[in-house]
Length: 479
Image (cartoon, rainbow, N blue to C red):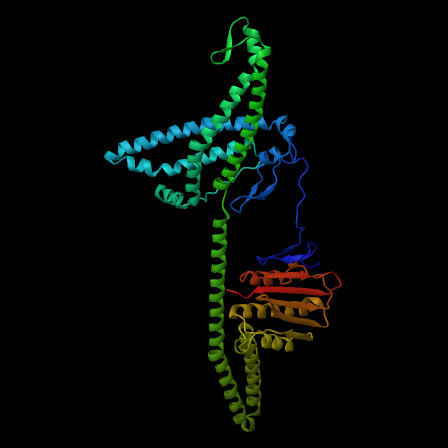
């Protein structure tokens, strides 16, 4: 395995040790769709205006491919159809809004209209659902539903939840734009298309109606089909203009739909921040509880064992001359008490070593290196004391890494280095063992990654078969 170069095992910002991946992913065959890489069946993924992941506006990219490529493709038909459906839906929506507002104002005299007016913002939710489906005419990927599931089963709680969501108000804004702006603009483009088609057909119409008089311009009769040819050419120019107008208007609608109807990252960011803070609070609470247990053991059980050892020692001295057999039993009990006291001291030191509190991470790592069954060269050079939670996390990470190396690696030497770079603690633990460490094999690396995840740290593992094994620990020290 290698470091975070895509070939090894990496524990990322979430702290989870996972196999490395390449930075990109190949596009599946046939994803470009019938109209090429920019067609509606194969939009490219880019960042949406709000910072969320959304597709590129495929029609806008098609417009930039040149007049021939755009005009002789299916794009103009798709755009005209998109505008036609949107204009009809927008007119219906405008009528519905006018009726609901009028009813709300009229019925407000008897107190019934206020609930009708209050529920108007919810009208944007079904409108947004229809619009996401309508985008399939020109865009393969459509925005996801930004609404979170409503908590509870009561109608009041659901309504309160929907009104509290920013997505509800963005969808209402989109509904207003659709009913007033996009519907009117779409009708204008479609009217231009219809008039241009009539002009294109004017020579045929003049020829078919001859010798009847045909007037394209009021008060001026067209004498024959040849005289109507300029009007036909003007109609062709109008069709081209309406095609481009439909394309750019459709691109604007798609952009606006992604901007207002797609999920925003801000809600996800707030959830991540709150989750990070809650995890930090849990870590602080756990650290405080661990220190309380360490203090209780140090001041309570440990002192009692010391007193028991001294009492057994005095009893051994009293019985040594009068009853050697009893003195031997007391001496045996005293030895057991000493072993229990030593084990309790090791337990207290493992819970939270006093040297870490008094002298910091460098001294604590040096002490644990002295107690390691494998020789350890420790060099931790820090310009200042780090936050207590960072020091505790780094200390127990080093302790667990040394224990794993002693149990699994077969190493003859372990090197531990630490430094502070850009307000990030960087620890390197390197052993010359057999290598082949796998986070999924239960070697404790997943536990180290989970511990580091609390502080948004990460663990990078390089352990090729045959060694050496390198652990790189990065922990941010800022609040």
